Length: 260
Image (cartoon, rainbow, N blue to C red; front, side, top):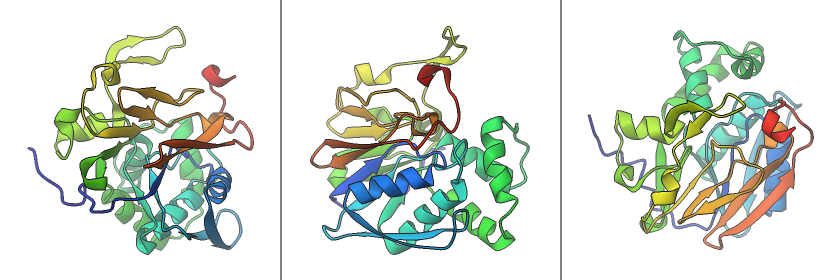
């Protein structure tokens, strides 16, 4: 079934700061926001930290998803994103790790990987009311956002033009996971179809999901996952300036062979 979701189409025209996969790296997220010129107001200790943000230039943050897993403070990242949603300063699309955590919160059967276990360990220390709020927040995250009068598309794993503005099972799965060839590389990771090589759309597509050491820019498609949780960098793309801003990760939180 294909439907049109009004929350996909946002009337906002920016300026925006689009940030790659955070994966529980709350301290790095705060550091990048400060570098981008945001004023942060934080209360509470790590693990129970509430952070509100504002920018004197009325900029807003767009998160490409995968807020949770692997890093040390997924709950703090969620708190920041949720408060930002309420304040109107942060928008987010759902990532595959967020979706899996949501299914766990709903009591669905999921495979508990080492990645997910880091988030579950944090969640077990939280009050039920907060976890209910998280579930509600994640349930309502769109697969992608269309911004700046259609000039900007944000989806976790990217999105071919045929899916822009469409909410269907196929578009949602692509937006969260991308597409693979069914083969694996020499490290055992799935080989992904390089849809960006054939992209000819007018809209700029910004995504994360595929961690690389450098920002990838091909045919009006930007990939901003630069492996922060693997000890590399957290990246933002400023829109409409198309400028890259980065900070170095505090440490390697979750070893990965491509980043060792």
